[in-house]
Image (cartoon, rainbow, N blue to C red; front, side, top):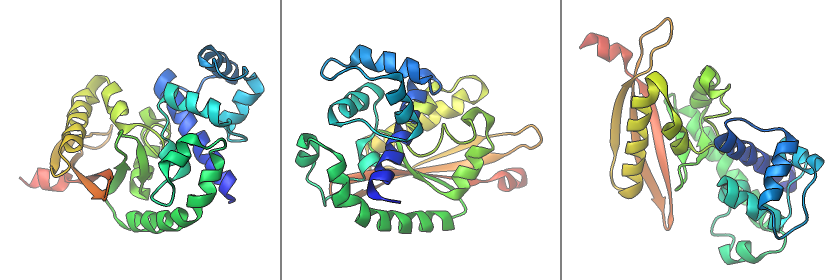
Length: 242
C-alpha cells in the first residue's frame, strides 16, 4: 500500500469512528456535507460527493478542511499520520499539505508498527493500547475477535482503532453501565498518575455462559510520549474454584 493510500485509509477510519462517536452511526454523505458546511467558514462548501468519498476512503480533505474535522469530531491526527520524533510537530501544524508529513514518517513507523502488532497478537490476553486522549491506537487479534462477536459493538467497529474507548465507556447504559463506569474511572486514574497500575475484576456473562474477567491498566512512556495499555484476562475458572 502506498503512503498516500495508507494515510487516506487511516483518515477514513478515524472519520467514521468520529462520526459514530458524534451521531451514534455513520450518517449519510448528504448529512455530513450539511453538518460540515455549517462549521466551515474558511473554505468553500463541500458537496455530498466529496463527503461520500471521505467516508468511503476514496479521498481526504486538504489541510484547512482537515483541521475543521479534527476539531469538530475530535479526530486523532497522530493515528492518521503516525507522527513521531522524525517529524517536527511545528512543521505539521504549519504545512500547507499535511500528506507531505506522512512521506517522512510512515515508511519507518510502518515497520515498527508491524513488529509491535505481531508481538501483541502473540499474546492471548485481550489487549488494547490507548493514546493520551483515550483513543484506540492498536488492538490485538484476541481483542478484535471478541469485539466482532459483541452485537452492541457493531462487529468491532465501535471498539477498534480510531475509536475513543474512554468516551465509549462513558456512553454505556443498561446492565454493563456499572462496569463501564469503573473502567473509565480506572483509565482516568492511570492517565493522571502514569506510575499507577489498576486492576478491575468484572462479570461479562453471555446468554449461555457465566464469565468473569480481570482487567489490568497501566501506562508506558518513552521520552515525552505515553500510551495506556489495557489487558483483559478470563478468570472464570478461578472464580468458580474459590
